[in-house]
Structure formats: C-alpha cells, structure tokens
Length: 258
Image 1 (cartoon, one colour):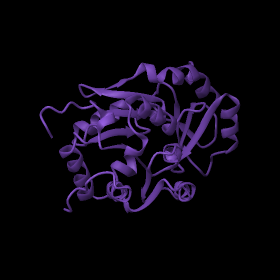
Image 2 (image 1 turned 90 degrees about the vertical axis):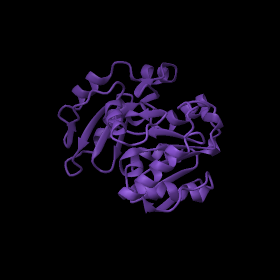
Image 3 (image 1 turned 120 degrees about the vertical axis):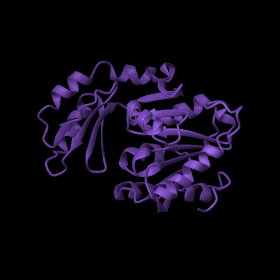
C-alpha cells in the first residue's frame, strides 16, 4: 500500500468497494481464506474500499480491528442505525447522514424495553444502542405476535439467524443506510459488492447493488435472494465466498491462490 494513500479518500474513484457483514461473512471461513482476503485488501487499498455493514457496535469493531482484521473506512453499524467514518481508529458517526434515523427513533428505547419486558422468548441484550433495542431470541418460546406489537408502536421488528430480535426505526436497516452512504461518497453503484449471510442482511442484498450470499448463509436468506439477478449465491464459505463473488462480477483482479 502506498505511503501516500489516505484511508477514506476518493472512495468514488476506487475500482471496487466491498460492503460486508462481519459474523459468518467477512469473519467466516477458514483461517487461510480470511488471511487471503485480508492481505489482498491491504495490498490494494488504493483501489479497494472497505465498508463494514454489521449489527455489531463500534466498541466491537475497534477491538476486532486492533486484533488484526483490516480496518474499514466507513461503517454502517448497529443493523443500519449507525452511519460512520473511521477517524484515528475510532468509529465516528456522520451526523448529517443520521438525521432521519434519529428523528424516527426519538427517545424510544425506554418505551420499547418496557413494552417488551415480559415478552416470551426475548432476553434483552446488555448494550444500550443509540437507535435500536436488541434481544437474544429463543425461537421455541417466541410469540410472532410480538412483531405486530412492535409495528403498532411505529417501529420495525427484525429477526435473524433464528436467534436475534431487533427493534429498529421504521424504514431503517442495513440496505437503506448503505445506499445513503454510497450516494454520499459518490460511489458508482455497480462498483459496490454487498456481502452477507443472515436475514438481517436481506435489505442490503435486496437493495439493487451487486451482492453475494456467501456459502453457509441462512437458508431463509438464500430462499429470498436466489431469484434476484444481481445476487450471487456462493458455494464457498465466508471470506472465500466474497472472493468468489468478486470473480463472478469481475470487480477486481483476484488475490493469488495460497
């Protein structure tokens, strides 16, 4: 990577931008596959942009990248309720892109937690996110009627991997927030590859940008995206599935085989 390269600069001029989920996707696959992908990104930083699109919070991302995973240049975090840039290895929200998110959420966290305090099959996660409330879900006890209760309150329910349940601002999720960031950065849509593996990635894979459901993805996600011509359903797992899709869409020269 050139000493003159500045992370986050000229994202619109990159040959290709990877917008990827973390768990099961960018962090999925074998140690060798992950290292091949990560080393390739680092060597080609001037032509490859990196955006994390994840349900994870900023503290997790910082710890992950300090541990050897490539730093992204931008983050669509907290299932789309955070839109941020990386500044001095800190996740810094871009306030101008979060105005609609904040307005739709208001100060709803306490009200939602109270409303769902006794909901069967839901265990509140300890992290207090800014614009979402998140639960671990026991599918055997979960009552699907809870989704309608959430909608009646003016918010969107989201289940994923049959074990997580999120309450989000109406109309806010990974896909819409990523498209807002892509437009803000002046990136041509056909230069982006979205990558995911569970239902909380659905809005990102459905949003019209080139996309991949990596090998090992949640069956319900694969069922939804298989008919879409802009989505590649990979056979390779995790990081290797991302490389498979880069080849499928001819987005960039590929990394050498290990």
